[in-house]
Image (cartoon, rainbow, N blue to C red):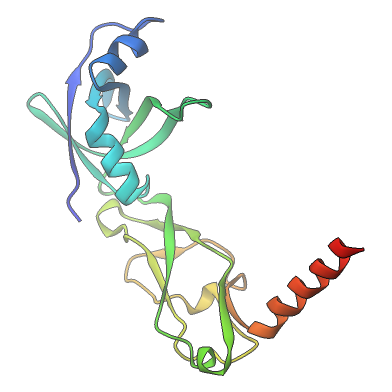
Length: 197
């Protein structure tokens, strides 16, 4: 996936910066890395919001600053605790020849056999830590749940392998289980009886 983001160099920082930037539809940011000096930037709020909404912080971004272009990862996102408005971003320039660690989502694929027998699929792990070269970074790790029967589960070790990508999350952690639907119904009935007492 090719994700690009344009940025503008900013010269100043200070208390009034965020308010001024917000009024102009921009978010202050900084890019840093091993072989570059820290650069203060602005990015368009609508552009970075779309990237975060569609991809989170787990994907490489082609950050274009004037005539330069950097492969970066979004390392920190600061939001207002009240309005949730984006306040500031940190971009880390990556070395394409060095392994990096990052968090990627877990996606379930297929329809479990046990669904036809009244089972309910429950996902317990939604993301895992992986290590890979930046260009090998997956959009997600997938788990095929097609063979799950009632009371079955699938663990991290069953995630579909991707060449050049090592999953660092413990292999025995359970990603998803297929439980009898009646268990959930019974729990609701118990809760209802307790509330009525």
